[in-house]
Every structure is written in structure tokens, then in C-alpha cells.
Amino acid sequence: MGMLAESIAPEHEFRHTPNDDPAYNESTYYNFSSTASGITGWVRVAMQANQPAGQASVLLFLPDETLFGHERTREVTVDQIKVGGLQIDILEPHVRQRLRYEGELASFTDPRVLTEPRAAFKEAPRRRVTLDLAVHAHGRPFGTNGDDPDKYVESTMAWGHFEQFIGVDGTITVDGTTYPLEKAAGLRDHSWGPRDWAGPLWYRWITASLDDGSALMVLQVARRDGQITREAAVVRDGALSEATFDAVDVTWTPDGFGERVVCDVQTAEGPVTLTAAARPPATYVPLRHNRPDDDGTVLETRIGYAPYEFSTSDGRRGTGIVEILDQLDDGLPIGMSSR
Image (cartoon, rainbow, N blue to C red):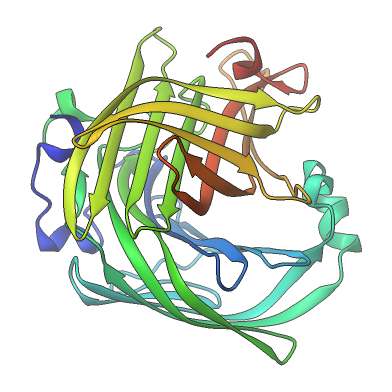
């Protein structure tokens, strides 16, 4: 049954013991969106214990600007999920968490400039941001606990990997102006194991929170061995169920961002077509990761983000995020020429 087959024990909320691989990574991520507030965003803490290194990232799509920040550290804590100004507290495993951030984020009206991040951050104005969010579970966690290699979702990205639909409440304060995050919902993710961003050819990861209180997750990964991994889940009234699909179709902008994303999903309640359209005015964020290959060439990976408005073939509407990762070929996503 894919990602719903294994139980995720409470201890998997916390740090795992790494092997000796320098690429070992432990990542904790939350996304959220609110139609009432007009805010979509995500936060992530990642730690590489064997380097040692840690990163914290915060991305916020406000109604009139995009805020982004990234911090690095050489100090990796064992008993906290914290880097710089971003801290994630596990209050009750699989039930409640708290997200807090205090610091400066760069402000962008057109975040496409992050294609060249050094220049973009140098020129961007700064906003003082405080984030205080209470997170509660919407359904049980689902995924793989890392014990069985045959069940890895993508072995180059992680061994263990679980997700959970969530509700989010709280406030985001920007330069003294407070935005209540009203009736927000989203998805959280925790993964551990050696990570290579250049491992998959591409993936599409959809989180859609709908106006009837249900939510969908769709993940499609293209592996370098030619295999395609497909996982999907639905939650309604706290009840989690598996879903299936054949493909995620992307309509691209000329410079390689997902303008429209469509997926036909078979759910326990019947078939539904899920359509995501970049929220106007479209604000696409390119985040990148580069590493040298064995032959010395540079492998370039782009992770594209935008806030999306969702609609379904049965009349529901919603908001959320589509994370679109591709290896770049002559500066464009390799997935532009494939499904």
C-alpha cells in the first residue's frame, strides 16, 4: 500500500543516529496556506551531522510580496530542531508542534531574481519577521520508517520519510504588522538518510488544502534508472486513505516554472481531477543546489515554488503548494520534455 503501509513510531519525530556518510541529512519541513489570510509558506530545518552543518529556510508568500531567508551553521544540536532563528518544538509526537522564527527575511516583488541568489540577496530589502504558529495533526502520519530498503520512496533522497496533513493557527508579524494565519492547513514532512538533490531526474510534490476540509498529497518521482514512483493520499475528517494516479501534467512558462499542474486522482470516494494554477500575479521562486559530478561537471538542480489556487472536477476549491524539482539541462528543467 505504498506510503500508508508502515506505522511511524513516536520516536521518529526526533533525531536519528546517522551512519558515516558525509551526505547524511535529517530534514524537518512544514508547509501551510490560508485562503482567509492570503498567505502561503513553508519552513525547513535540515542538519548534516557528519559535516557538521545545518540550514534553516523560511519562505512566505504574502498578498503583496515574497519573503525568503536561509541561514547556515556549523553547530548541530542533538536535542533540538533549531538552526539560527528557526525552531521547531515537538510538543506531543504526531499530534502537536510549535513553529517559531525571529529574524530578517529578504523581500522580493519578483523572486525569479533568485536564479542568481548572491546578487538577489545583496540587493533585496530586508523585513523583520516573527513567526509563531501552533500545528495540530489532521490524520495520522504516513510514510516509511527507514527499516526496509524496498520501501524507500527515493533512496538518493532519504531512507526514512513520513508526512502528515496538518492544521495551522497563529501569527506572522512583518515590520510590526501582524497577519493572523486563519484556518490554515498544509503538510509536514520528516526525512532522514543520505541525501543527493541531484539523485532523481525530477519530482512533483503537490499539497492541496480544499474548502470542504479535505486535503490531498500527490508525489511523482522520476528516477535515473527509468522507474517512476507515484504516491498519493487523501485526508477527510481525520481519516486517511490512499489514492492513485497515472501522471502529473505540468504546463510550463517559457523559463521553466509550473504555470498549471493537473492530475487525475483515483480516491476512495471516486475519481477527481485536481488542477493547480499559479496564484496571480504569479510569483515563482527558483531555489537551486549545485554539486560536482564524478567527471568534474556541475550538476544543477532547481526546486521551483509558487503559491497555487486549486480546483477539482467536483467543484471544490483550495490553496496550497506544488514543489517542482528538476535537474537542469541548458538552464531549463529536464522535465519540460517529459511527463
